[in-house]
Image 1 (spheres, rainbow, N blue to C red):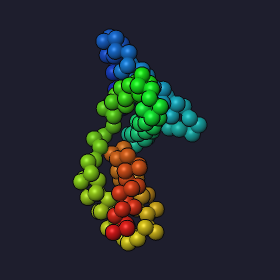
Image 2: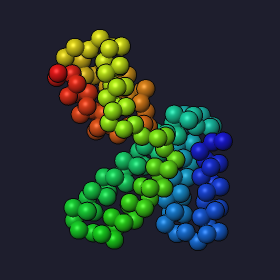
Image 3: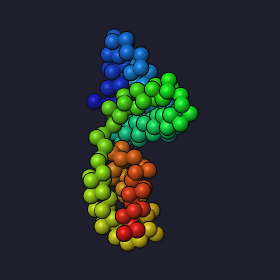
Image 4: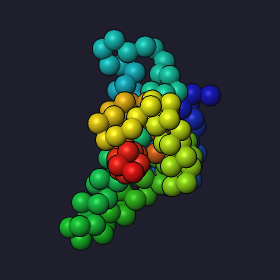
Length: 150
């Protein structure tokens, strides 16, 4: 079942339950999907990889907003972003823990033959493809940099 259909089903459930917070997050996801589907040159149906990218982008936006609101002491807005982030993350693939991520990155470094921080671009390119949606970009970048400096 496509992400769009899952979201539509979840919207119906949230409406019946009168869960406004969940409904707001689901509608935001659906809007992002519709925008991606109607972009110039887009295929009629999104691939699973494209859906994951959309969800990852939405989650990153929520995390960034959450950090800003917490920094500014806006608990009311931070709570909204946190609630939406929880809903979005439920549709993303299971995130890798630190150990799994390190193992995967070490394997990618071996595949690419990277030996120094100069090779970070090669490693990041392959890691971004293989670990798409399973890890935060900042965490991935910092780990790759640390491992290449060893």
